[in-house]
Amino acid sequence: MPPKPKFSKEEIVDAALGIVQRSGMQALTARELGDALGSSPRPIFTVFKNMDELYHAVRAEAMRRYDAYVSSARDYFPSFKAIGILMLRYAKEQPRLFQLLFMNENSGARQFSDVLDSLGETANLCLEFVMSDYGLTAEEAQFLFQYVWTFTYGVSAMCVTGMCDFSEDELINMLGNEFFAIMSFMKSGMRGNVIINMRPVKRDESFDPSQTELVFKKE
Image 1 (cartoon, rainbow, N blue to C red):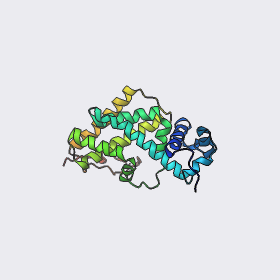
Image 2 (tube, rainbow, N blue to C red):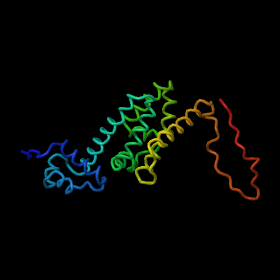
Image 3 (spheres, helix red, strand yellow):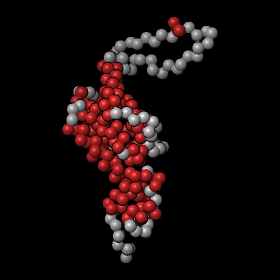
Image 4 (cartoon, rainbow, N blue to C red):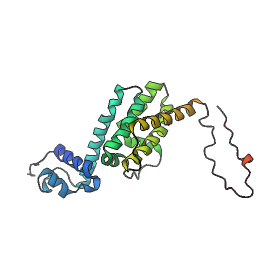
């Protein structure tokens, strides 16, 4: 008979998350986890086949807790802005867990829809909030989410890496301005007709600024 596990899966994952929260994913080793459990590393592998399986379980539990954290946005209006504020707050309060969830390489991502799939329940909540609070279609909601989430992610990454230390009031204003800009663009009727793929033109002797004016046409 296989040995009876000394620790449950939940106990091991909880201890592992504590290590990641304090010191980052690179600090999560079998030895460190054994020390955190007050044991040798051996009992870990009566529950998990290897460290890779443990890593996946740790990330899944971290995402479950993050989803529960941001789901409280449902109690606020507008909920989409609330979830953005919670994401920014989480990045400031839990930088190592944010790195685990959102700042690791995603080699399978080739377009934004791939990123959307990796976000799980959080993405579904955002799309639900946008459609219910602003009356947008599913396609419009995804367009808005793509650009506002990308902006929010960028600011969050700046907070996580210590590049900046914005106050919560500053973050709220920045998020509101970005949301208003994208929503205004959508409502202007210009989406799909603006020249967005024009490459910069080199300023040389033949450069004529009067010939480079962009003309925006409404639908």
